[in-house]
Image (cartoon, rainbow, N blue to C red):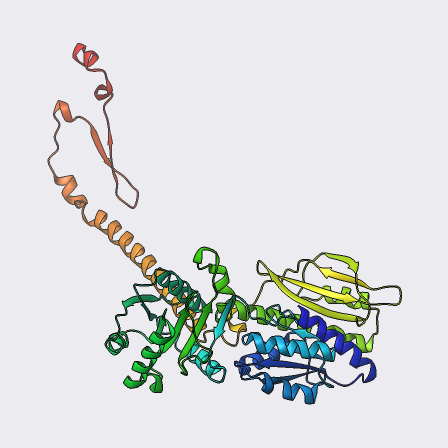
Length: 476
């Protein structure tokens, strides 16, 4: 929760000079600006904050470093907290470095090292200007439940790598059953394969070298698939496959580059680290980050009217509803830190870890919340990017289940009524029973009586002689 801490520190520093100036939270995003803004408004409402307390600014970086930094330089004096979306990791790291020089707190749903200059092992190499458009289109078409991957028989690692990435992508919408089809590429029949694939798939996952990928995209353009948006390509660049600095340009291409790994194995977790932002779990992290940021802002707003020491503010923060438990410890802290700072956001095994920095005249200490448990969580309708059809589908299935239960109960009642009536109507009438000849032979001296019960059940009383042992009966 580093960005939370930074935001809080900046807010605390600025609130002392101007108590009524709203706390300014600036979000740097490459796409999904509407979702970020919606999540921010939901967080404001959750912590009962208004525009006079907290102001939200969204900066569209378009995955371009200059477009992100230019507006931040103009606004840096008014930024209290900077939230960085790490989808374009290089841009996010440079923005974080600038913010550290400005002493602006930085928060990110995925931890960022401010000094990180190199990309991670798994890279997303794509035309930055079209990346946001591509990703949005992929999400729009995830409702389609079929995809295809095109592999080459010369690369034994291709099927496993492609399948892994496909499963990660499809995991973002696990309410739909997905199917994956494999087609073997045999150059130069790319057009034939694409014509065949277009019948059942819009998302095509490949594992090609750069020349093969260029030929595939050229075939797609010749068929008009790229221009019409009928097909989207995700290419896995395996270790040892050299790509030039200038990747094939296409609005419909996402290239995932994998660096060499031990024994050439494709490690699932390493792939997941760079593809996980396509999954719903990362958006849940985003909501948790927003909760922490605005939780901190709510404490700052209270601190304006009722000033307290940093430790009191921290205790008040931990008592807020978003945190229901946690452990703390104090460690030495370097000098020069602000009075209260939210420094680190980290997720260890999906558990958020929050680090607060406290400063005072008696010495600096780092108070670290080792574990923070989030209360309950968020319902599907609490996510602005969720599937809007899910609530309606739940209602339909609930009504259908209730209707089936009513039918089963009605069938059982009708069956019981028919069975009861068949017993009554199947018996002979009383008059016929009385007029019927009676067998008075020795073998049938048993008396038969009609029950007075409503069901007219017949009972037979046995003669004591019938219960005797055969030898005794013959002796008599």
